Length: 81
Image (cartoon, rainbow, N blue to C red):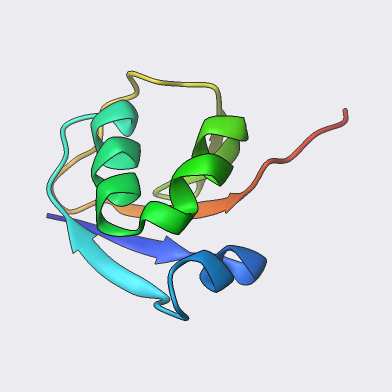
């Protein structure tokens, strides 16, 4: 299972939960399961979040593979250049 870290202000939508494990093969599946586990976070996820998978940041990468031993950090959407 991937280790998921909820970063910063997003913890307000998970009742303060910072870390959890979720079994998912790609980012879309992970975000779906995360939304089901924490419904308050679903609207934020739909609006857009950034993910760092094993230290590499992704945005709008719905089908990026996630390894069973990966660490995925869910962050507020990063914008700009």
